[in-house]
Image (tube, rainbow, N blue to C red; front, side, top):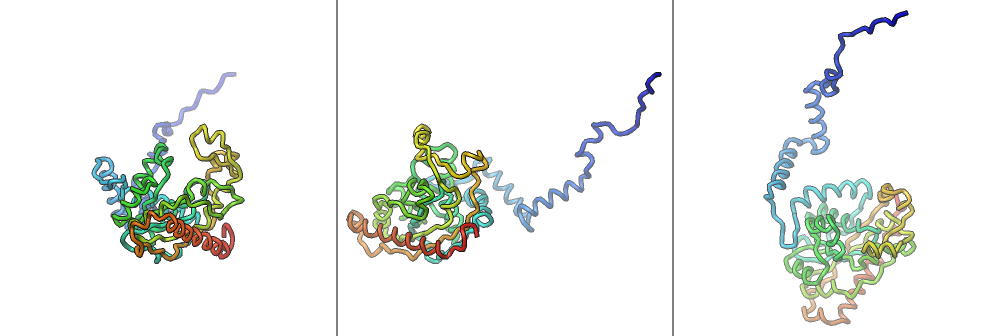
Length: 318
């Protein structure tokens, strides 16, 4: 018995059935317009045009940075835009006391530090810009600027080395400067010590404020302690990698990259009343007792505010 001859059909070939050719050009245009409205909003045509101009300037090198490497346009149009949904949708940051930050002129914002990675600094930067329209210039540890990619991004976002010379130059120039005196001791402390302030160094930030006569604004942040609960450390491996600590959390490294996703804790950040320094003579910045007393005042203000905010927060994730 012979096999029946293969029947040929005049249907379309594989090439002719390409999925892109099955969609009319008008449908593609409608889909792209819908996507543009979703990304850029109702005035998507104007926003898209501005975005194209922005990209053209970046490619051609037609943009400026200040003496510290701060790229204002890139920070506002890209970096803060990326962080804003995390602030508003993930951590649901509630900002209080923004009126305590001067609307112009130099000021020093001093905050507690926590969270295993410095997410609190990033959320503070976005909050200050959104609420006040000012750019917060963070002071960072030298390790930040030694890291590949991270160091370059930090510079472009307005950060500079945490040294008195740069801090005082910025403050005299009318900048809003942020400092986290606990340093790595704050963000790397165990979860069992959450919201207990570590030592504030030797008070170098107070000396800078006294020399420049700018107000010190205490900042208390509740919520960052819970994003990566630190339950352990691997000091030997951290030393090999040149890191201050290598964290172990309930999800990292157990869940691999998934463990790097921060938990969606509810954040409260409150800017306290400014502590004025313009009544002192700049020479008093070298008085160790005065520096100690002001440092202790700032630290105690932040600590007591943390306790109060913890009592007001309904729940960690609520």
